[in-house]
Length: 323
Image (cartoon, rainbow, N blue to C red; front, side, top):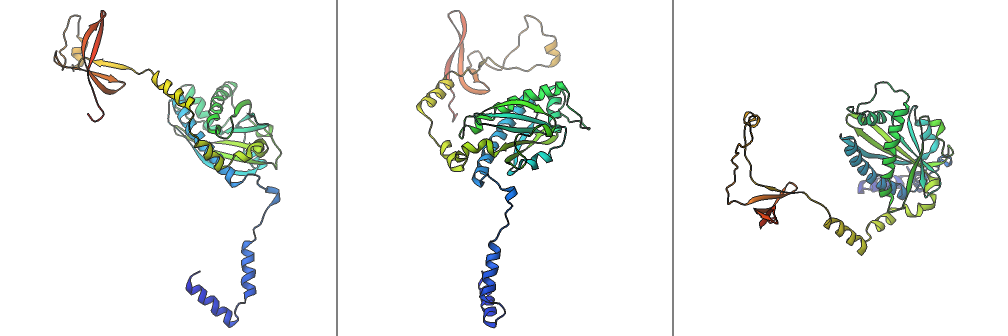
């Protein structure tokens, strides 16, 4: 409180306009909060934060996967993570819809992976060679469309393992796909679930992907679903075996190396009229060093030659970073 407010309060007390009993009562009233036992949340705020971290990582992973898989711009972001009764989620789903019933092994029970129809249609259209557009009128999914969506969903579920690795090594498996929410009753209507809502943009089509995780499924590992446990797991130093494995992979990685004799420019007409025996003058001299590129980066200069009856080059200069 400011000094003026304190002075006004003391003045009101001295004149009898208010008394200490009223002040105490008003303070007590402000502390009272209503609580609905029918909608009791079993997820603590710390556990909700952990789920937010997990699926924020997952959103980035499937963004990269879908962008490469569909050869189009895809953006997936976490919109919200909230705890609510399963009945609220079930009643909000409109038919037809894609509901994947997922076995969340090694945990007991199932979760739901929902993809909204407009996003599902866009995925199918893009895989079949279209531009990734959605349908103007929502209709039932065909058997071929469901088979394509099932394949995509299985690949997306495999990518869910990595974000969960710091909490538990999960093995999610697609049991079945339902297109009617009434046939996807995995828990009681009043059971608390965590609903992770992801916004998905496939080309010009926007939609939602929802992941519904019942509290009963993750109850055995709730002690691990805390930000303290999460960050302590993330900050563990890599073991010697992991470092050696990374070094071996880097050492055995294949990179393309190109030696460029020289360059020239000709017109399209000259190119069309080229015949066997024609000579093209290059922009390099006979005694000049050749450029050697690793990938697209200029890393060495070399001179041409022959070794064991094979055309070869000899490195004459290494290009330093500062060069």
